[in-house]
Length: 364
Image 1 (cartoon, rainbow, N blue to C red):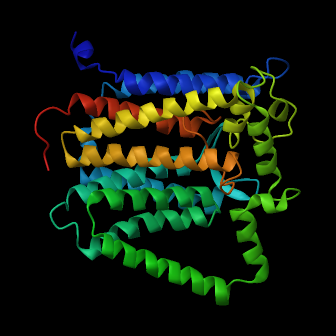
Image 2: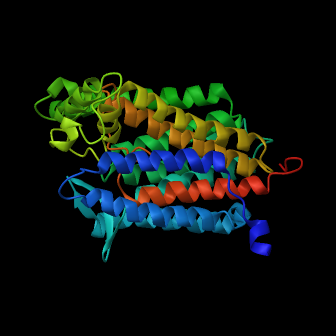
Image 3: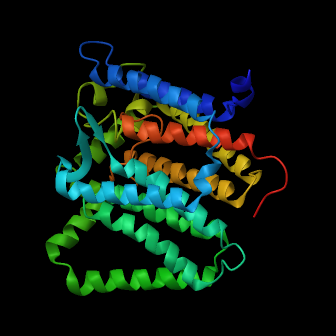
């Protein structure tokens, strides 16, 4: 009976995320021939949902301990650094660690690690948070992870870490004038780099990254095919399994980087709106729970998670519609892959468990 008393599930988090994951499975299913991605993703989904329910039984308040967070951060840093030595190269980027039959992406661990570290740092300094040094010190933690991601190169991952840091700085109460000054220094540094240090071919790579549709026969091919897929879906879509861009392989990586485009082609504008509403329901629930959190650490962890999911959602949808650079960011709960699903569902389990302890006045 004790275990059932401890068992608590936030269904407002679980149900929308489960529908999104199921939408991903349907999109991956070819409905004929080989269903490699569908089969493997189905197995992963069973595993991660089981982990979600198990994690709701755990009291995660031990994550507040400094030594625990230091250990998590060091493991993350070490895993990213290890990529330089034994990383598995995928399409020119060192992004994967191969451990026997398993392939793991350390960036997925880095996403949750940086949120935990920043939540701990800002929660302990709420009284003197407006001091400039807190921007610099918190930025240094993010910078260590960001550099390792940038060197892979994992530009999308670096963008996420930078965005999470900036978002958590904004919600922590840090002086906006100090933040603007810091960002101004960063902008000036980039201007100097662009004007005097970068070679023409390096500038060309940056331009094609920022605006991939400028080269639809080269770097922008995937983005161009993605916009065709989104537009061809119309209002109600072509129907389940009828997406020509994805099923006929005109749209590469449709099960990962461009799954939103593949989904929209089959389900149309109506399906895309419903999918986005599911994400908004998750984000609203996380923010609402954060406002009722028992401590500042839990509140900041929840808000940091909402920022992380928002960045992934906005960038993924933006690049699928040709509005943002192609960064390779997955769509949470939906894109193919085990390591990102594991981290996302585990995070939901932690948030669900934290809700059980969020009673009474907040402890600063």
